[in-house]
Structure formats: C-alpha cells, structure tokens
Length: 110
Image (tube, rainbow, N blue to C red):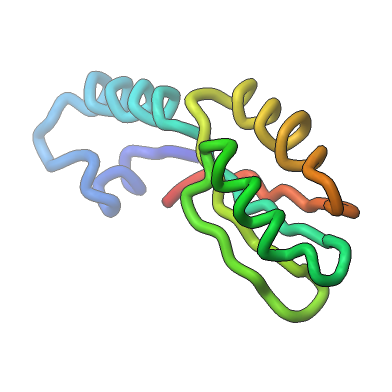
C-alpha cells in the first residue's frame, strides 16, 4: 500500500509538496514501468547451455544463469506489458525444447 508516510521515506515526496499530484505521478510511473519476473527452469540434463542460448535469442532475457539444486536455470525477464510478459513466458520460454517445467516469480519493485 502506498501512503504519504511511506512515500516520504522512499523519497517520492518532500515535505510541503502537493502529495495528491505527486502520488498520482508516482502511481502513473509504476503503471508504465516494464514488468519483470524471475523464471526458474527444470530442464533435461545436459541441455542447460542450449536452452540459455535459445532463450537469450528470443529477447526479453535480462540475466540468465545455470544453477545447481532444485532448479537448473534462473532467468530474469522483462517485457513491455504484463500481456507481453505472459506471452514470453508461456508461449516462448516454456516451449523451448528440453524444458520440463518452469516457476515464474513476478517482481513488484526493484
């Protein structure tokens, strides 16, 4: 929840500013930011490098790493809108050959 007090703490407002206009500007800016997410992948053993290359070639991948543990790959992706982010994850990344499953974590703030 965005309050005047939390906005002061975060530096969005300074004392004496018209808080309504400033908060409206802040909320508009939040709506226009490009949505991003972490996508965690389970993939077929030995296919990590091929999947990383394919995913990076699709566009929208900001960072990508091979990881060890429950998930094999971790990617940070970004798109112009939530609809485009959904399309990227659902119709592009999840359909790459040898991807077994994914877990998507939508980010709310950076």
